[in-house]
Length: 225
Image (cartoon, rainbow, N blue to C red; front, side):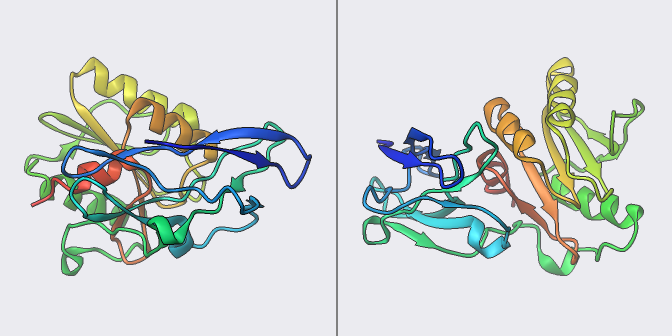
């Protein structure tokens, strides 16, 4: 069960009650990181990929999976990192990568490379007929296959919450699932909106390997063959 701990913003001093998010284990049981009520939250001032994730062990089946670190946002704009109890199952770990084989990845040098790299992921999920979609999205490049809508953004601008919402609405209109790939990553508002809508978000690293950045993307990636 998710727990709630007091969190004090290091920038403005506001006090909050923060509940740890829970995620679905492959066995179906919910898992959540164990927060350390004795530790103090710290402000996130820079991002390092390997520091974004922690290992959380499922109490039901014993399998450890990697999930995003607990990071609540304060109304003042500060993103806080809440300490986890490592002894109780919160361990730092490398971010999960795509199960699409690395040898099939395409190094990202151009927008065309980004599209090519993104196409490999839905194909790995069993969607063979991936093609350019007729309707152009607000940002990025639209791809489609029966049952899935794919959006690829090769620009240097992080995706916004509006980008996520437009993708979700397009998928809903087609009764399809969706996934978004970005080279530059996602704004905090975009990640929060994607989590609430269940939209999988992935980042294409320079080697062309899709990296899931939220729980829906991790769950989607787990279905790859």
